[in-house]
Image (cartoon, rainbow, N blue to C red; front, top):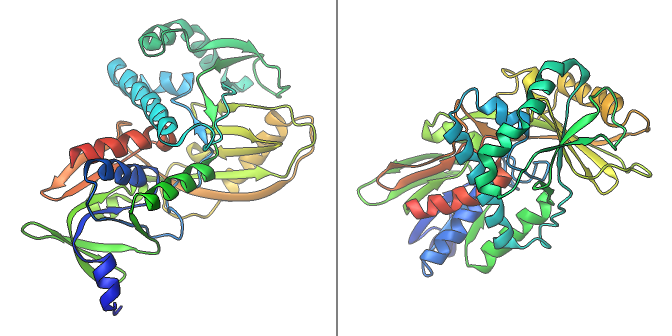
Length: 370
């Protein structure tokens, strides 16, 4: 691609910071860099027409982990590590709210609920029994008990009568959040270029040479915030994890409000006004869902519809209006990777499916690292 003099001068010359990825982490990184470096030239490169990962495709949960997910994490992480994860997620949510405002992201503090299918009796009993223990270990963070039992008032089907309630969860509008972040970036003189696929980079003595769509330019610092796509260029131990989602048409007299979890967080649903958004199910095919493809599959979509019909809306008619998928970044550990890869190359990746909660904080940490 042959660039004009003006294009080279205004977009690709004297670049101080180049951020790859315009999602939650990438844009928070740019805003934190702008605070520290008011005169710096900051360029964001995004390979999609919109953020390609999960930032505009997630369910809009402002959560830090259901009780079954926390208990499951304790089997592979130390108690201290799990507490730190929860602390980071909750701090990240507060930072997101501070940066954008509750009205802008349409925060609805309905609380979160976890329900358990009848066939999961042993795990249901374990979660109920461990409510006091989990409350005790995270009480220093919240200054009160977080989880409690509540009788199901939503008329779900095929579940145990008691739900586990968390008053600290909320819904947000993912689209509003990302539009607000992009608007804030533009207002802070940050250049965002879409449809720019970074294919390679080379570290020189004091700069980094970046190749994107056949364009080659130099930047003082290069930062990757590509999460599920990170391993393609950075060799980080991050695996892509596809999350499939569907949404219903409006349902008359829908009486479901809140964020809801099933099966250790692998399934999740919420109302959006009078619709139900339902996603997850990658545990049905971990190998197949380790992909950056944005297709959907019959296996998972059929299971989502089955659970909608039998569990979530057993007494109501519904129609599916739309289906999609997004790409998360996961690994053997749930702690995000925020590190310096070489003299002038950095990354903030592996959100572990908690990008809404932790993305703003990871962006701040990445900017601080630079």
